[in-house]
Length: 294
Image (cartoon, rainbow, N blue to C red; front, side):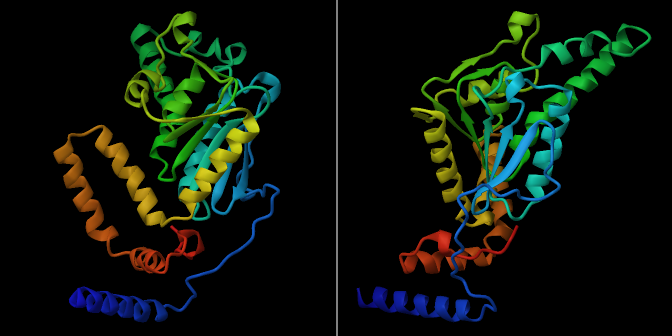
């Protein structure tokens, strides 16, 4: 017992000396305004609304409420642009995705998108098929970008989540919903198999634990709080966790372990480890730690 106590004392001394050498203070607190704050002028879109709702937490709303947040051609392009920017934004550590208005989304905007695949360019069937495949791959990227984004993405669903909406939330990391939420894979009713992610991702997430809330406001508060909790932790740890979870989902255990070892051979050298250990020893929250941007 005496030896353990001495070892613990030595470790605490080393941690304190290591931390005192840092040029900036570890602990700080900055109060956030209750009103959402626009993250950056570059996040300006026709179909999406992006705001900062908590420290290091972004809120991305599908923002066509008068059209039931139906997914038009602009939406598919803006999703890629938005989440590629978020992936590189060191001020964002977690994201909540919701829908403005009375429901999450009615899915594809058939009035605008219906004719696009009926008018594919090409001199013959082979060339039309090639161009159709290219277009499908572009639309798949609109949701794959959510999965590839290293920042955890939380879907917050109220009301209807139809067709492309299921594709979207299947690519998110966590799903919350209200009691009135309902889900429908609608593509089969309009003559096609779902082709932008539902059939590939949904079987792997069914059965995952989720939370159900009484109404939209309670759900958003719950989602923001979860995102804030995630955002308060080491970005090296959080983003590394997501990358390796996605990798392990699609690979064997042995492949996942090898990938994890290679990943952490450099990531374990982070100063976040020392800072987090110090906070744990002092029974302090990681939210009070100033981690370097990533």
